[in-house]
Image 1 (spheres, rainbow, N blue to C red):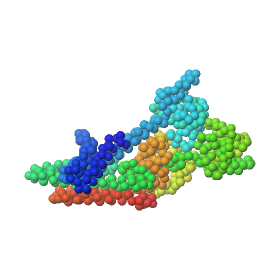
Image 2 (image 1 turned 90 degrees about the vertical axis):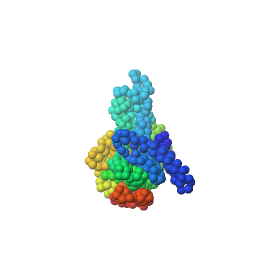
Image 3 (image 1 turned 45 degrees about the vertical axis):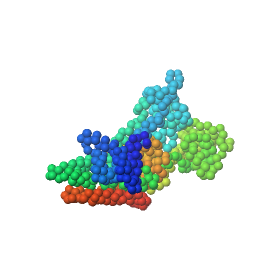
Image 4 (image 1 turned 60 degrees about the vertical axis):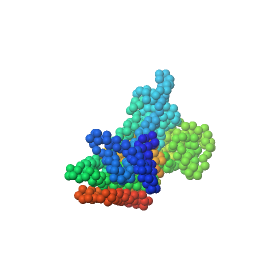
Length: 628
């Protein structure tokens, strides 16, 4: 953070402002407090001032120069505190924007680390050579050993393994790969050895395209501004022109220079957008603070405003609506085998004790949670793409893919389970099929209630976007109460789905957690990441983070953002009324400077306090129950 000059200058300006205010309250000599205030002006104002002058050189007038001019004008008539406060607000805003930009850029660069820097290339005669993964050419063959990350997108030539490709597709369990199957760079190989023919160069892999999509979407999104910023330039031009006219025209009529300058400075004070800035920022910042206390990190005021304008919500499946790991959902014993459900689970868990596969760990975990004492296993062996085999109390137990062990009767049972979106695992004892275990990713507690709440709040049912297979997606959607499902999507497919939704006029808030969600998070109107299980890239790309992984906070923060927007509108009306009255008085009458300053400060205090109402815990409680 401190490597950014914007952060260092903003911190210095804030410290000087605090020191100057303390000095003024303590009754120290005025030269000391004024010196500290002017140092605050210099440290916090030189960057926006320089940016404003550069914009002026390009024949545009922006609010940065206007703020510096208003601050200087305030100091010129003795209101140095007001000007310093304005400088600190703008310096801090610029620092936060620079910090957010840097974090996103760093995360995008770190994403490339998912793909290994080196790979084992097989040359003529099967000789091995360690080469840079970036130098691999289409058609070359690489060897991938257990536990290694795959160095290129390609097709399996020989061997079999289970590959964890959650970073690309979001699937909750490793996928069995054998000859002819496609694999992706950066995915993690399981316990088997595979030979892979490269099908794409390094700069065209799926992981490289994810990086490109995130960078492109982030660059587009960075141009988003607060509503009030969209009228800044016109306001700046009008205000500067009016100030110049107020100073020069009276001089032509014989008014004294001091009187003309005083009127112009009074105008720039009462017309300066301090109240307008505070009309917008305190409600949004208070909403950010309240959301943060309740487990939602909203990264900027722009994001809070965008949350309030969202008209549709889309969810990722694995790790977002679900817990992201398989759970045992059923033990199905075949008739006539003589085994009970508890006995079959005990045998399968004993055989799976030595397995590193997520399905095996889920079986062991389920046995322990059921109070089953795990029996010792001997002669354990694991065959990639097939399953495990072990001797348990004299019996040979095999737990494997159903395709390897099934007969006709059990095949119907497995088909029914798979049609329901579950994963089936067959168990054979001493060569005889004993039963089938059903496993599935488990829906998060409160997910159906969250979906219902969002439907009530926004008026449309949320959408499901997932890289998982269609059957698993349909099962989860039915449990959550979602009717619109887009399944088997690669990262580019999720971006396309978001674009299609937004092309239809919807402003999409996307909730996700994985690397594969990052491009879509960056492309959505607002991206929300699950904090505990989320990848670094998803957390940094997202506009908001649910730190406690509580889905119920999604509708709550949207409701809070909508209330913040309503307060912004109310504050803008208050600020505009004060500015209109004071400016009219100054132009058509003789507004005393102390009264002008009092009116300006009064409007600033009113809108500031009104916005800070959202700091109360009652604001969050209301957001969790309100319908709009």
